[in-house]
Structures are given as structure tokens and as C-alpha cells.
Image (cartoon, rainbow, N blue to C red; front, side):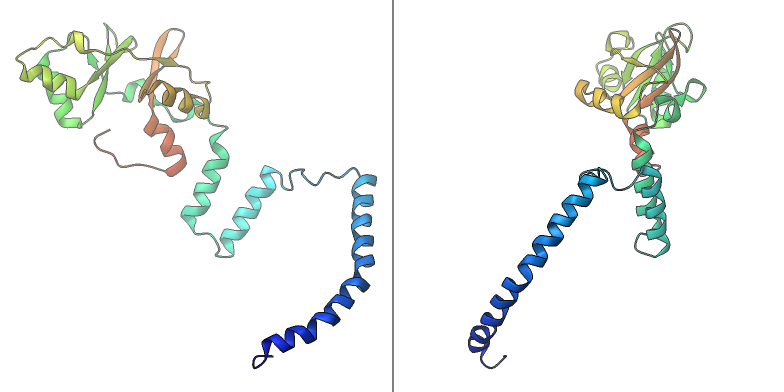
Length: 212
């Protein structure tokens, strides 16, 4: 066959053609039988083959077999959980939020930006629970270089969400609005903030971004 492939192909073509004609009725019969079984038992070929719980077990089994490493396994499970997450599951609580007052001393604001390296901070009026906007570090520094201390005109508006909103829904909303940070409110008062990074971390794990 290796020495004369063309001759071998011609020789084999006829027997294969004969087998095709012989086996065609059987192939047709099995096809009709499959349709009959699906019809009788009301089976749907397009129906989901695995439930989410079964798929989770399958992923765990595959990891134990060494096909997936720990990182890949965790990423799949995080992805499955993502649609179930609410903002309250991944927001930063208010007591952990670094914020500045609307009329804070410019030297204190400068020190906060320098020590935290944050690119933006929430701004509150009166009490921390009344977040009214966001101050960007770049705007603040540019203002200082211009010899200005009052930064109230630089405060940008901030949108609000609730702890019950789905993370997957909020992410799309923030992308459309091109917003990086939102304040989480309950009963009209801030209870925390959430950023795109917080939501992405739910998929990829902790992101060590000291300039966030």
C-alpha cells in the first residue's frame, strides 16, 4: 500500500462501495430507531445535558484527575457563581472606605492621595454616609499646580446602586456609563462603595493594584 498508494486505493474502492450498500439499511434503521426513542420518551436533543450541580461535580472530578489545575478549577467555579452574586457580596463596607470631606484641608487630601496611591476617592458632605461625588487624583494635583486649594469644583457626580443588585447587571451598567466606582445606598444613606475591580476580583481573585 505504501509503495503503490494509487493502485491500493483503486483496489480498496470497490469493497468499500459494496460495504456501503450493505450497511446502509442498518444505518438507516438505527437512525429511525433513534428518532422513535426520542419521540416516545419525549427527549430533546437540545436539552441541557448537565445541571449546574452535576457540572460542578464534573469539574471537581476532572481536577482530581489532573486535567485541570487549581487555578483553572477555581476560575470555572467563580464563573458559575458570578451570576448569583449581589453587590452586597463584594462591596467595600463604609467603615473601610477611604473618603474625604467636601471642604477638607487640601494638605490632608494631598497626604491621603500620597499614602494610599488611590486614583480617586469618594467625597462626603457632613457625614461619611452622605457621599456626594468622587475626587480624582489627577484633577486634584492639576489644581494644586495651578495654585488653587479649593477643589469643590472638581468633584464629579457619582451614581448609586443597592446591595441587592446583581453584580453581572451592574457591571454592564457601569461599562455603558463608563463609570469605575459607585456608591452603595440603603435607605438613602451610603453603606459602602463598589468598583469594577471589586467585581472582577470575584472572577479572578485578588488583584494587587496599589494604584486603584
